[in-house]
Length: 376
Image (cartoon, rainbow, N blue to C red):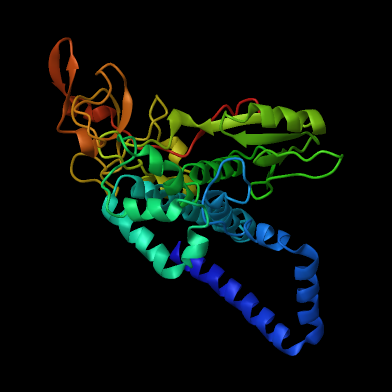
C-alpha cells in the first residue's frame, strides 16, 4: 500500500505545481480562480469537504470522511490498477494478489479499535500532519481525540459508545472496502459478464430524480444487464434503482459472514498467503475439501508445525474474550476464531470440558468467495 499512497501523493504534488505556476504566471488563469470563488461563495468550502472532511456526521454528506478515504482506496484498484490487470492474464493474476494483500492490510487497520497504543500513535501522527482545524472540523472531535489518546477502552466494551463514530471516521471503510474489493475479484473470476465498477459513483443524475446506483453493473453477452449490490442492507436503494431503470439488481455478500473478528483477540481474520497465491493462479478451487473448505498444508510459510497461523476454528469456546467478558457467548453458539488463539482452550460438551485441539482436522483458512451468485 505504501508505494501506491506515495504515487498518489506525487500526482497531487504534480497538480499542485501546475496550479501554483499558472496562478503565478497566467493572469487569466488566476482571474478564473477569483471568478469561481466569487460565484460560488461559501459553496466552494462545502464542495471541498467532499474531498476531505474532518469527521463523520449522519445525514450530512459533507461529513463522511470514512467514505472519502474509502473512495480513494477503491480508486487505486478499480480506477487505475485495473488498467494493468486488463492487459494480460498474468497481469490479472498479479492484480488478484495485490487486492487480497491490500484487503488484509485494510482489515488490519481496524486494529485501532482494540489496540490503545497503536490508536494513540495514529491519532498523534494525524495531528502532526494535518491542520487540526480540518482534522477536527466536527465539533467535539478534538475533545474525543484527547480523551481517547489516554483511554484503554476497546470496541464493544462499556464506554466505547461515545468514541465509535469518531474512530470510524478515522478509517477508510475497513469493513466495507474489503468486501467490495473481494466481490470485484470474484465477479471477474466467475466471468459472469463485463464488470463495470460503480463504487465511486454515489449518485446518478437525470430523469428528474437522483438515485444511488448499485456497486457494480454486469453486462452479459446476450445483452442482459443487471446490478450487484454488496451487502443485504440496501434493499430500498436497490429497488428504487430497478424501478427507475428497469435493470434488475441482486444483493450479494461474502460466504460465512467473512470477514470475522476473532472474539478472543479482537483482530480480524485474514487471508493466508497460500490462499492468496492459489486464488491468483486459479488452483485454489481444486484443493477444497468436500465441504468447500481449504485446509492449509505444510507448504505454507505460515504453517507452524500444527496449523497455519491464519487458520480458522469455527465452533464453541469457553474462556475470556478481548472485551473483558469471562466467556464468549453461552457455549452453545458457534463462532469464528483464530485457531491459534483457541487451540489450547476448551468448550463444554455433554457437561465436560472438551479440548478444541481435538478438532484440529476441522481447522480451515478463509477463502475469497461470495454467496448468492447462482442467479447471476
